[in-house]
Length: 78
Image (cartoon, rainbow, N blue to C red; front, side, top):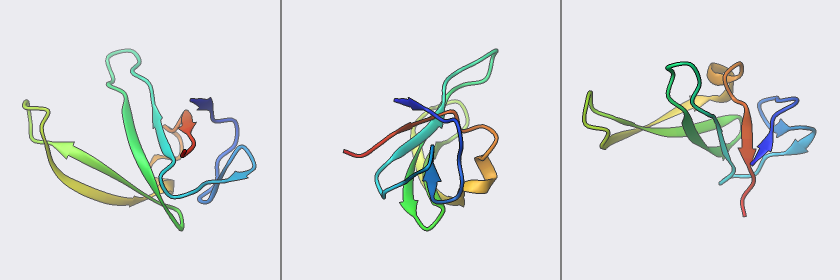
């Protein structure tokens, strides 16, 4: 994974993001880590589990700005 130095809705570290890129943040001080997939056009999708089970029960699409301050890494696809 590549650390995020700069991030906009469509590029990370000055390189355009592509659908399939993974974005997220590692666990820290009691907060669990998270990974989302970049869909394009500033949109990311993530799955979420029901309370306490950890099983994915749905997929939500968000604009990247919702997580802008949290995102710390990108794994470019492929």
